[in-house]
Length: 255
Length: 289
Image (tube, rainbow over all chains, first blue to last red; front, side, top):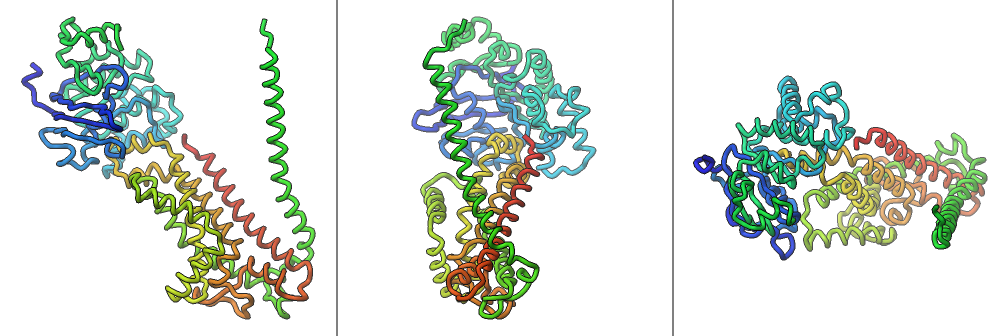
């Protein structure tokens, strides 16, 4: 049972506001170790802001005001953690692919290099390992020294995933990772995620409801900065959603 | 069948007319530059010689060359660039990458804009008060260079800020996302991709310093010096000041001399600017996104 598992992340009374209206409103959420938590919900419901709180990316947005606390392994990420250390423990894949303006290899080794790794054989290993995990290795193995920005959008997105895996995160946050990827590749990556969840916790925001159904252990439905519904996938997608809006959203009647 | 309405036809005509208007105006912008260059060449070229460039002015500046003024201009430009570049670029990095958007930084930005609008003669008075008198540098190359540096700071800061802003925010975020610090992000992501723009701004400010007259007038430039500057605490002559002097203050200067001096000055600035063009096109071929 998931409920018996250790709590990896505890979000406590989190409130985030950019202007006056809060985009996340007194949100409480526990995320368990080695689970895949899918977050669904219509646009503007605060899904992405929630992910950006997890790795403290909102620190750099001077307009964002954050209240409440988030615990990672029982320690506050705001009080007990340096933000750059925290971000090494939390991998983040943004919705729009970002190939950094350097070679493919340099992209994947960026995080380890910034952490001081200079061992070229170790870096080579990371490149191959992460690119394979992101289902990109076969396409780029002959041009690792080519510019990452010349890759197609879908390839860059998989590169972003490879880069996020390169620092061995404990939690992997995916924000709409499949937005620029074709269905076949998406399935490849989903298979990889199923493999990865054995050693890491995965939080994914998705607009593809079937993706939440396929990948998630639990699914949370967000609306107006609150969690409307949070349950095991069997219940959410098994017609037992507690909230009628969740049911309607899943069925495509609302959103 | 598609038949364009009268409105669509008129739109096409207007489009063409507007484009012609713009191209004509642009051509007229080019014209003054062309005429100035042509006129300077015509009048100044006969007086231009190796001796003119390498000899001291003699006989009350009515004969000889302009060597000390070229040396002085080099001193002034190099020292002012050494002062203003690090200061300006670092300030721009702070404003762009670190500073929060609050009242203080907004006041700083406003101050920079205003500094850019201050006339150079006012900078000269500031330099006289601050560097020559208060810091007791005396009228010297150092004081004049510092005055030039202050004058160039807003230009460098603004152009550097623009270049830094041109680097997409998503690059920074991707770098932060994997746990790189702000400094690492600046060093490995932001600077490598904004260096062409920064260099261009710097080189243009060099050109501006070389031609500046008013700002160095009270702070370190001499009407005439019988010797070359030995240290930064000496005064010096400068091309721009010399041009003013022999054009208006000295009687009996051959007509070609001021033109030749202006030609040297303008060639110097143009060659510096062309370095920036070369740099920019070099970096453009290496552009990575």
